[in-house]
Picture 1 (cartoon, one colour):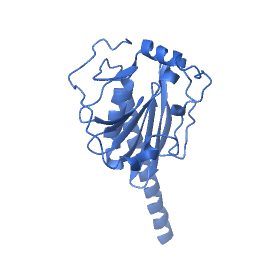
Picture 2 (cartoon, rainbow, N blue to C red):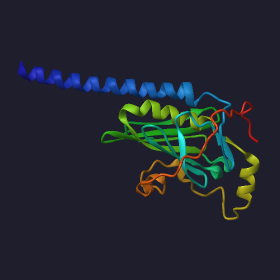
Picture 3 (cartoon, rainbow, N blue to C red):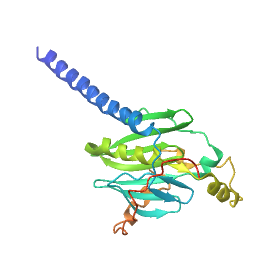
Picture 4 (cartoon, one colour):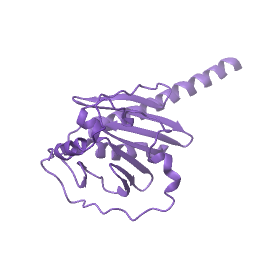
Amino acid sequence: MRKCLIILIVSLTFFTGCSIKKVETDSLKNIFETVLYRKKKLSNTYMNGYKFYLPKGVTIIDKNEYNLKLKDQKTYYYLYVDTIAYHYKTDNTFTINNKNFFSELLNNGDINGYIDIEEDEDKYFVVLMYNYAKIESYVPKDYLNDALTNMSYVLSTINFNDKVISEYVGNKGTVSQEESFDIFDSKKESDTFLKYEEEYGTYKEPIIIDDDVVDIEGTND
């Protein structure tokens, strides 16, 4: 009888855990469908070669060429925009990692990417790549949906300026289509902002963004 009870408890724990994970992953997929995959003609933030919509409550606190460090009330986001990969329409080479909490290829017509979420103690290490841009973040577990919503708004509204990018690529004589692009890799050890997290003990004043500026057309300039 006791042996049967132990088996029952273990079984309930296993299946309950699976159910909870399924609910969580289903909510993530819902964010993709309602936010990431929806075409939004919004922009309030303009960079060299691209523009995008920065959600309310998220601010830019550092800038490094095409990369940005963002912050909201609970976490930091590291945005990498690969204009070279966009120019050459480089294919996504990401491989799903079934050992992680959630790892999946994303496909929305001619726009693709991936989501990779790895458990790290009381946080998740989240990598979302979409539309030739990638956001990485260490996210508190109870903030995953909110953080992923912010990430999705940023990546789904990135709009590239073909003219500016073509001029940039033209001035880079050593750049070739065969060049390997880190944006398609999900590695915490890669040469990214996260590697230099300790260097940002004191933060600069946020870069002011006009929340009221909205690009109605949403087309490439």
